[in-house]
Amino acid sequence: MQYRKFGRHDLKISALGFGCMRLPTLGDQGKIDEAEAIKMLRYAIDQGVNYIDTAWPYHRETSEDLVGKALSDGYRQKVFLATKSPLYLIETKAEYDQYLDRQLEKLRTEQIDFYLLHALNGKKWQQCLEHDIFDFITRAKAAGKIKFMGFSFHDELSAFKEIVDAYDWDFCQIQYNYMNEEYQAGREGLRYAATKGMAVVIMEPLLGGRLARAGSPALQSIWDQAPIRRSPAEWGLSWLWNQPEVSLVLSGMSTMEQVEENVRVAGKSAVDSLSQGELDIIANAREYYLAQTKVDCTGCQYCGDCPAKIRIASIFSLYNSAYMYDERQGAEKAYQSMIEKNGDFSQCIDCGQCEGICPQNLEVRRYLREFHKEFSGK
Image (cartoon, rainbow, N blue to C red; front, side, top):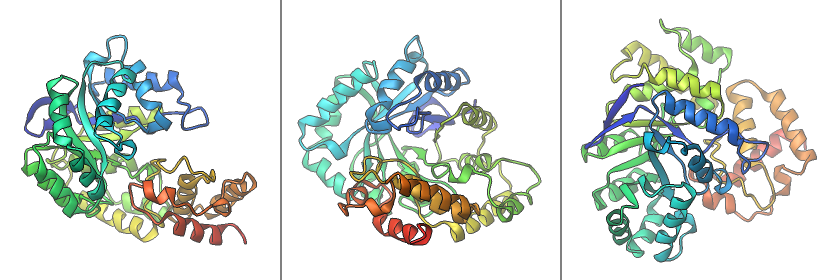
Protein backbone atom coordinates (compact mmCIF):
# COMPACT_ATOMS: atom_id res chain seq x y z
CA MET A 1 0.00 0.00 0.00
CA GLN A 2 1.14 3.52 -0.78
CA TYR A 3 0.61 6.32 1.76
CA ARG A 4 0.19 10.02 1.08
CA LYS A 5 0.55 13.36 2.79
CA PHE A 6 -2.69 14.37 4.50
CA GLY A 7 -2.69 18.13 4.12
CA ARG A 8 -0.68 19.89 6.82
CA HIS A 9 -1.05 16.98 9.21
CA ASP A 10 1.76 14.56 9.91
CA LEU A 11 -0.33 11.45 9.31
CA LYS A 12 0.32 8.27 7.36
CA ILE A 13 -2.92 7.76 5.41
CA SER A 14 -3.39 5.06 2.78
CA ALA A 15 -3.89 6.24 -0.78
CA LEU A 16 -7.08 4.18 -0.86
CA GLY A 17 -9.91 4.60 1.61
CA PHE A 18 -12.85 2.22 2.04
CA GLY A 19 -16.18 4.00 1.53
CA CYS A 20 -19.05 2.13 3.22
CA MET A 21 -21.97 3.38 1.12
CA ARG A 22 -22.02 0.50 -1.38
CA LEU A 23 -21.44 -2.60 0.73
CA PRO A 24 -22.85 -5.95 -0.45
CA THR A 25 -26.51 -6.42 0.45
CA LEU A 26 -29.10 -9.17 0.69
CA GLY A 27 -31.51 -7.75 -1.86
CA ASP A 28 -32.28 -4.53 0.02
CA GLN A 29 -30.11 -1.47 0.68
CA GLY A 30 -30.92 -1.68 4.38
CA LYS A 31 -29.89 -5.32 4.67
CA ILE A 32 -26.11 -5.51 4.48
CA ASP A 33 -24.53 -8.90 3.93
CA GLU A 34 -22.66 -8.60 7.21
CA ALA A 35 -20.38 -11.60 6.87
CA GLU A 36 -19.18 -10.62 3.41
CA ALA A 37 -18.92 -6.90 4.22
CA ILE A 38 -16.85 -7.56 7.35
CA LYS A 39 -14.65 -9.96 5.39
CA MET A 40 -14.06 -7.27 2.72
CA LEU A 41 -13.32 -4.52 5.23
CA ARG A 42 -10.89 -6.62 7.23
CA TYR A 43 -9.14 -7.85 4.09
CA ALA A 44 -8.62 -4.25 2.97
CA ILE A 45 -7.28 -3.28 6.40
CA ASP A 46 -4.95 -6.28 6.43
CA GLN A 47 -3.63 -5.07 3.06
CA GLY A 48 -2.81 -1.62 4.46
CA VAL A 49 -6.00 0.41 3.98
CA ASN A 50 -6.28 2.54 7.10
CA TYR A 51 -9.12 5.00 6.35
CA ILE A 52 -12.72 3.81 6.76
CA ASP A 53 -15.54 6.19 5.82
CA THR A 54 -19.23 5.87 6.63
CA ALA A 55 -22.22 8.12 7.39
CA TRP A 56 -25.56 8.11 9.20
CA PRO A 57 -27.82 7.55 6.13
CA TYR A 58 -25.73 4.92 4.33
CA HIS A 59 -27.59 1.66 3.78
CA ARG A 60 -30.68 3.14 5.39
CA GLU A 61 -28.87 3.99 8.61
CA THR A 62 -27.22 0.58 9.08
CA SER A 63 -23.72 1.24 7.72
CA GLU A 64 -22.33 2.72 10.93
CA ASP A 65 -23.50 -0.29 12.92
CA LEU A 66 -21.80 -2.64 10.45
CA VAL A 67 -18.58 -0.66 10.55
CA GLY A 68 -18.63 -0.79 14.35
CA LYS A 69 -18.85 -4.57 14.20
CA ALA A 70 -16.15 -4.86 11.53
CA LEU A 71 -13.73 -2.80 13.60
CA SER A 72 -14.01 -5.01 16.67
CA ASP A 73 -11.37 -7.64 17.49
CA GLY A 74 -8.58 -5.08 17.39
CA TYR A 75 -9.30 -3.59 13.96
CA ARG A 76 -10.38 -0.20 15.35
CA GLN A 77 -6.80 0.47 16.47
CA LYS A 78 -5.53 -0.13 12.92
CA VAL A 79 -7.54 2.56 11.14
CA PHE A 80 -8.64 6.16 11.00
CA LEU A 81 -12.43 6.27 11.22
CA ALA A 82 -14.58 8.88 9.46
CA THR A 83 -18.30 9.58 9.66
CA LYS A 84 -20.58 12.55 9.14
CA SER A 85 -23.08 14.76 10.95
CA PRO A 86 -26.48 14.23 9.24
CA LEU A 87 -27.32 17.86 8.55
CA TYR A 88 -30.47 16.98 6.61
CA LEU A 89 -31.99 15.68 9.87
CA ILE A 90 -30.78 18.41 12.22
CA GLU A 91 -33.19 21.18 13.18
CA THR A 92 -31.77 22.45 16.49
CA LYS A 93 -28.33 23.21 17.88
CA ALA A 94 -28.62 20.46 20.48
CA GLU A 95 -29.08 17.79 17.85
CA TYR A 96 -25.47 18.06 16.63
CA ASP A 97 -24.35 16.67 19.99
CA GLN A 98 -27.17 14.14 20.15
CA TYR A 99 -26.40 12.61 16.77
CA LEU A 100 -22.66 12.57 17.48
CA ASP A 101 -23.22 10.67 20.72
CA ARG A 102 -25.43 8.15 18.97
CA GLN A 103 -22.84 7.69 16.24
CA LEU A 104 -20.13 6.99 18.81
CA GLU A 105 -22.37 4.25 20.20
CA LYS A 106 -23.14 2.77 16.79
CA LEU A 107 -19.47 2.76 15.84
CA ARG A 108 -18.44 1.31 19.22
CA THR A 109 -15.72 3.90 19.71
CA GLU A 110 -14.87 6.72 22.07
CA GLN A 111 -13.49 9.01 19.38
CA ILE A 112 -14.14 9.63 15.69
CA ASP A 113 -10.89 10.53 13.97
CA PHE A 114 -12.41 12.43 11.04
CA TYR A 115 -15.83 14.03 11.46
CA LEU A 116 -17.57 15.82 8.60
CA LEU A 117 -20.53 18.09 8.11
CA HIS A 118 -22.37 15.98 5.56
CA ALA A 119 -23.18 17.16 2.03
CA LEU A 120 -22.70 20.85 2.70
CA ASN A 121 -24.08 23.39 0.27
CA GLY A 122 -24.72 27.10 0.58
CA LYS A 123 -28.13 26.67 2.21
CA LYS A 124 -27.00 24.08 4.75
CA TRP A 125 -23.94 26.16 5.57
CA GLN A 126 -26.14 29.09 6.53
CA GLN A 127 -28.10 26.73 8.77
CA CYS A 128 -24.86 25.61 10.41
CA LEU A 129 -23.89 29.21 11.08
CA GLU A 130 -27.29 29.91 12.62
CA HIS A 131 -26.73 26.89 14.88
CA ASP A 132 -23.33 28.22 16.01
CA ILE A 133 -21.49 25.30 14.43
CA PHE A 134 -18.09 26.50 15.59
CA ASP A 135 -19.18 26.17 19.22
CA PHE A 136 -20.17 22.55 18.57
CA ILE A 137 -16.85 21.80 16.88
CA THR A 138 -14.85 23.38 19.70
CA ARG A 139 -16.73 21.48 22.40
CA ALA A 140 -16.62 18.14 20.55
CA LYS A 141 -12.88 18.42 20.02
CA ALA A 142 -12.27 19.49 23.61
CA ALA A 143 -14.28 16.51 24.86
CA GLY A 144 -12.18 14.17 22.73
CA LYS A 145 -15.21 12.97 20.76
CA ILE A 146 -13.70 14.02 17.43
CA LYS A 147 -10.11 14.66 16.43
CA PHE A 148 -10.15 16.28 12.99
CA MET A 149 -13.00 18.33 11.52
CA GLY A 150 -14.01 18.69 7.90
CA PHE A 151 -16.96 18.71 5.53
CA SER A 152 -18.20 16.95 2.41
CA PHE A 153 -19.48 19.19 -0.31
CA HIS A 154 -22.09 19.35 -3.09
CA ASP A 155 -22.60 22.83 -4.54
CA GLU A 156 -20.97 25.51 -6.69
CA LEU A 157 -17.30 26.52 -6.47
CA SER A 158 -18.11 29.93 -4.97
CA ALA A 159 -19.92 28.30 -2.03
CA PHE A 160 -17.00 25.90 -1.57
CA LYS A 161 -14.49 28.73 -1.29
CA GLU A 162 -16.73 30.60 1.17
CA ILE A 163 -16.88 27.56 3.44
CA VAL A 164 -13.15 26.85 3.15
CA ASP A 165 -12.36 30.43 4.17
CA ALA A 166 -14.77 30.45 7.12
CA TYR A 167 -12.85 28.09 9.43
CA ASP A 168 -9.51 26.41 9.92
CA TRP A 169 -10.70 23.06 8.58
CA ASP A 170 -8.50 19.99 8.77
CA PHE A 171 -9.84 18.46 5.56
CA CYS A 172 -12.68 18.38 3.06
CA GLN A 173 -14.31 15.78 0.83
CA ILE A 174 -15.30 16.55 -2.75
CA GLN A 175 -16.71 14.71 -5.74
CA TYR A 176 -13.94 14.55 -8.31
CA ASN A 177 -13.02 12.27 -11.21
CA TYR A 178 -11.91 12.68 -14.79
CA MET A 179 -15.52 13.40 -15.79
CA ASN A 180 -15.98 16.03 -13.07
CA GLU A 181 -12.96 18.29 -13.46
CA GLU A 182 -15.15 21.40 -13.48
CA TYR A 183 -18.15 20.05 -11.58
CA GLN A 184 -18.99 21.51 -8.15
CA ALA A 185 -15.66 22.22 -6.39
CA GLY A 186 -13.72 20.61 -9.24
CA ARG A 187 -10.02 20.92 -9.91
CA GLU A 188 -9.96 24.58 -8.89
CA GLY A 189 -11.55 23.74 -5.54
CA LEU A 190 -9.13 20.85 -5.04
CA ARG A 191 -6.15 23.13 -5.50
CA TYR A 192 -7.70 25.96 -3.49
CA ALA A 193 -8.22 23.75 -0.45
CA ALA A 194 -4.72 22.32 -0.79
CA THR A 195 -3.20 25.82 -0.69
CA LYS A 196 -4.90 26.27 2.69
CA GLY A 197 -3.12 23.21 4.06
CA MET A 198 -6.30 21.14 4.00
CA ALA A 199 -6.26 17.48 3.09
CA VAL A 200 -8.63 16.70 0.23
CA VAL A 201 -10.52 13.40 0.25
CA ILE A 202 -12.02 12.31 -3.07
CA MET A 203 -15.47 10.71 -3.28
CA GLU A 204 -17.13 9.25 -6.38
CA PRO A 205 -13.75 8.57 -8.04
CA LEU A 206 -15.43 6.24 -10.54
CA LEU A 207 -18.73 8.10 -10.74
CA GLY A 208 -20.79 5.51 -8.93
CA GLY A 209 -19.11 2.70 -10.85
CA ARG A 210 -19.92 4.08 -14.29
CA LEU A 211 -16.23 4.65 -15.03
CA ALA A 212 -15.30 1.14 -13.89
CA ARG A 213 -17.39 -0.74 -16.43
CA ALA A 214 -16.16 -2.14 -19.70
CA GLY A 215 -17.52 0.17 -22.35
CA SER A 216 -18.62 -0.11 -25.93
CA PRO A 217 -16.20 -1.14 -28.70
CA ALA A 218 -15.82 2.56 -29.49
CA LEU A 219 -14.67 3.31 -25.95
CA GLN A 220 -12.43 0.25 -25.79
CA SER A 221 -10.70 1.39 -28.94
CA ILE A 222 -9.67 4.55 -27.07
CA TRP A 223 -8.17 2.59 -24.16
CA ASP A 224 -6.44 0.25 -26.62
CA GLN A 225 -4.28 3.14 -27.81
CA ALA A 226 -2.32 3.06 -24.53
CA PRO A 227 1.01 1.23 -24.37
CA ILE A 228 0.09 -0.15 -20.92
CA ARG A 229 -3.11 -2.16 -20.46
CA ARG A 230 -5.30 -1.01 -17.57
CA SER A 231 -8.85 -1.77 -16.55
CA PRO A 232 -11.32 1.14 -16.72
CA ALA A 233 -11.24 1.36 -12.91
CA GLU A 234 -7.45 1.51 -12.91
CA TRP A 235 -7.48 4.35 -15.43
CA GLY A 236 -9.88 6.36 -13.27
CA LEU A 237 -8.05 5.79 -10.01
CA SER A 238 -4.62 6.38 -11.51
CA TRP A 239 -5.78 9.71 -12.93
CA LEU A 240 -6.63 10.86 -9.41
CA TRP A 241 -3.49 9.57 -7.71
CA ASN A 242 -1.44 11.27 -10.41
CA GLN A 243 -2.32 14.63 -8.78
CA PRO A 244 -0.32 15.77 -5.71
CA GLU A 245 -3.26 17.66 -4.18
CA VAL A 246 -5.26 14.44 -3.80
CA SER A 247 -4.76 13.17 -0.26
CA LEU A 248 -6.99 10.10 -0.36
CA VAL A 249 -9.32 8.36 -2.81
CA LEU A 250 -12.47 6.82 -1.31
CA SER A 251 -13.86 3.83 -3.16
CA GLY A 252 -17.29 2.40 -2.40
CA MET A 253 -16.57 -1.27 -3.00
CA SER A 254 -19.36 -3.85 -3.29
CA THR A 255 -17.48 -7.10 -3.97
CA MET A 256 -14.28 -8.74 -2.85
CA GLU A 257 -13.07 -8.61 -6.45
CA GLN A 258 -13.38 -4.82 -6.40
CA VAL A 259 -11.50 -4.64 -3.12
CA GLU A 260 -8.68 -6.78 -4.47
CA GLU A 261 -8.39 -4.74 -7.66
CA ASN A 262 -8.47 -1.39 -5.89
CA VAL A 263 -5.89 -2.49 -3.32
CA ARG A 264 -3.65 -3.74 -6.11
CA VAL A 265 -3.91 -0.50 -8.06
CA ALA A 266 -3.39 1.60 -4.92
CA GLY A 267 -0.18 -0.28 -4.29
CA LYS A 268 1.20 1.14 -7.54
CA SER A 269 -0.18 4.66 -7.13
CA ALA A 270 2.10 7.66 -7.41
CA VAL A 271 2.11 11.35 -8.26
CA ASP A 272 3.09 12.16 -11.87
CA SER A 273 2.99 8.48 -12.83
CA LEU A 274 1.00 9.03 -16.05
CA SER A 275 2.60 10.27 -19.24
CA GLN A 276 1.13 13.10 -21.28
CA GLY A 277 0.08 10.55 -23.88
CA GLU A 278 -1.84 8.59 -21.25
CA LEU A 279 -3.49 11.76 -19.99
CA ASP A 280 -4.54 12.52 -23.56
CA ILE A 281 -6.14 9.07 -23.83
CA ILE A 282 -8.13 9.72 -20.65
CA ALA A 283 -9.21 13.07 -22.10
CA ASN A 284 -10.48 11.27 -25.22
CA ALA A 285 -12.39 8.79 -23.07
CA ARG A 286 -13.91 11.73 -21.19
CA GLU A 287 -15.18 13.25 -24.42
CA TYR A 288 -16.74 9.93 -25.40
CA TYR A 289 -18.51 9.59 -22.04
CA LEU A 290 -19.73 13.18 -22.09
CA ALA A 291 -21.30 12.61 -25.48
CA GLN A 292 -23.13 9.48 -24.26
CA THR A 293 -24.15 10.29 -20.67
CA LYS A 294 -27.84 11.01 -20.19
CA VAL A 295 -28.02 11.62 -16.41
CA ASP A 296 -25.22 12.64 -14.02
CA CYS A 297 -26.46 10.21 -11.36
CA THR A 298 -23.87 8.49 -9.17
CA GLY A 299 -26.22 5.88 -7.71
CA CYS A 300 -25.76 7.19 -4.16
CA GLN A 301 -29.29 5.98 -3.23
CA TYR A 302 -30.18 9.12 -1.25
CA CYS A 303 -33.46 8.96 -3.19
CA GLY A 304 -33.96 5.33 -2.16
CA ASP A 305 -36.84 6.12 0.21
CA CYS A 306 -39.14 7.36 -2.56
CA PRO A 307 -42.71 7.43 -1.12
CA ALA A 308 -44.02 5.96 -4.38
CA LYS A 309 -41.38 3.17 -4.34
CA ILE A 310 -39.94 4.26 -7.70
CA ARG A 311 -36.49 2.75 -8.24
CA ILE A 312 -34.96 6.04 -9.27
CA ALA A 313 -31.26 5.18 -9.18
CA SER A 314 -31.85 1.90 -11.01
CA ILE A 315 -33.80 3.69 -13.73
CA PHE A 316 -31.03 6.23 -14.22
CA SER A 317 -28.49 3.42 -14.38
CA LEU A 318 -30.53 1.86 -17.18
CA TYR A 319 -30.77 5.22 -18.95
CA ASN A 320 -27.01 5.69 -18.96
CA SER A 321 -26.27 2.06 -19.81
CA ALA A 322 -28.51 2.20 -22.84
CA TYR A 323 -26.40 4.97 -24.33
CA MET A 324 -22.94 4.60 -22.76
CA TYR A 325 -22.68 0.82 -23.16
CA ASP A 326 -25.00 0.12 -26.09
CA GLU A 327 -27.42 -1.79 -23.86
CA ARG A 328 -30.72 -0.39 -25.05
CA GLN A 329 -32.47 -3.73 -25.44
CA GLY A 330 -31.48 -4.79 -21.95
CA ALA A 331 -32.64 -1.43 -20.53
CA GLU A 332 -36.05 -1.79 -22.18
CA LYS A 333 -36.49 -5.31 -20.84
CA ALA A 334 -35.42 -4.33 -17.31
CA TYR A 335 -37.78 -1.35 -17.29
CA GLN A 336 -40.72 -3.50 -18.40
CA SER A 337 -40.03 -5.62 -15.32
CA MET A 338 -40.13 -2.48 -13.15
CA ILE A 339 -43.45 -1.50 -14.72
CA GLU A 340 -44.90 -4.92 -13.90
CA LYS A 341 -43.77 -4.49 -10.28
CA ASN A 342 -45.05 -0.87 -10.01
CA GLY A 343 -41.55 0.56 -9.60
CA ASP A 344 -41.64 2.81 -12.67
CA PHE A 345 -42.21 6.53 -13.19
CA SER A 346 -45.96 6.10 -13.72
CA GLN A 347 -46.22 5.70 -9.94
CA CYS A 348 -44.80 9.19 -9.28
CA ILE A 349 -46.89 11.36 -6.92
CA ASP A 350 -44.90 14.48 -7.86
CA CYS A 351 -43.84 15.20 -4.27
CA GLY A 352 -40.32 16.36 -5.19
CA GLN A 353 -38.66 14.63 -2.23
CA CYS A 354 -36.05 13.11 -4.55
CA GLU A 355 -34.97 16.50 -5.88
CA GLY A 356 -34.78 18.00 -2.42
CA ILE A 357 -32.31 15.37 -1.22
CA CYS A 358 -30.29 14.74 -4.41
CA PRO A 359 -26.66 15.81 -3.81
CA GLN A 360 -26.20 16.25 -7.57
CA ASN A 361 -29.13 18.70 -7.71
CA LEU A 362 -30.67 16.76 -10.58
CA GLU A 363 -34.07 17.50 -12.09
CA VAL A 364 -35.01 13.96 -11.17
CA ARG A 365 -38.63 14.04 -12.28
CA ARG A 366 -37.77 15.48 -15.68
CA TYR A 367 -35.20 12.77 -16.39
CA LEU A 368 -37.57 10.06 -15.19
CA ARG A 369 -40.31 11.40 -17.42
CA GLU A 370 -38.00 11.46 -20.45
CA PHE A 371 -36.79 7.93 -19.80
CA HIS A 372 -40.33 6.63 -19.26
CA LYS A 373 -41.51 8.18 -22.51
CA GLU A 374 -38.66 6.59 -24.45
CA PHE A 375 -38.44 3.15 -22.81
CA SER A 376 -41.93 2.26 -21.57
CA GLY A 377 -43.30 1.55 -25.00
CA LYS A 378 -46.22 3.90 -24.34
